[in-house]
Image (spheres, rainbow, N blue to C red):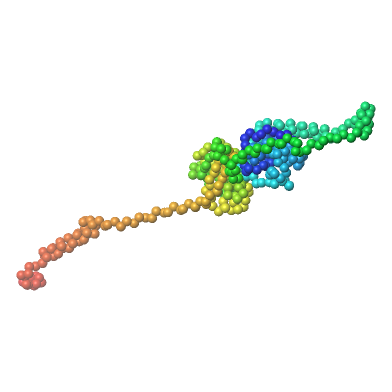
Length: 360
């Protein structure tokens, strides 16, 4: 086993000692040329510092004895992740796993060191497997051993009592830093961290679960990306996507992220299928964190405008068509009556008209 230098920066987690083991498959996501038979253990102390240990996958539980020596702890005084029988363990959040992986990725020559360690390990195993050569008889040594087998005269040697030993200086314990709740980091650690908050929308469609950033600005030219990797909080109240999901994205620009439906538990799928939901997205160096919100209300149908019926006062026109017609009729009647009166005989004529015609 090879002990590496201290990690590039301390990691603030719970105030306890922890051994976190990375398998070759996990390390190959960071180092493409990581050897298959090499593993890595991060030894975290209670002060937030850490050291790296390379080991061969066949070393077994001997690795844990080496970790105990690095952490200066006995068996049971430090947690092991993933769980190992006989050792305590603890739950590590996805965000903390990403922090640990980021620390490993910061060691550029780690894969090369792993190759060198495997070469030394195989050489040592082969050396142990070779039978030791039989020693040649040495007559001088035989004489010496025979002389040593003679009984020795009694010699008294005084024993050294513990009280005579020089007192050991008491170990000075470093002051502990302020403990932070699990999943939180102190202000000193996150002071230079970059983060972006984006309003988003979650829906379920034929391409799976869709997360739309800045949905009010989406057009047919909006870029869409498919992401397979997704992690969930233990209470499923939010989920996280890898940082590459927003690679090339600029705040204020819309983006569509599709995740296969089968990557989500059935309860979340039913919840997203019922109605689209609001979401708050936080983009950090560790990933894209999505917190679903309330369901969106369906759009209300547009009300058809009703014909406005306004009672307008009827204009009292002096010369309306009806009044003109009545005036014409009245005038015609008056003229007719006047003409009839004009042809009437005078009242003084008492002789009928017939008699006037045939009187003579």
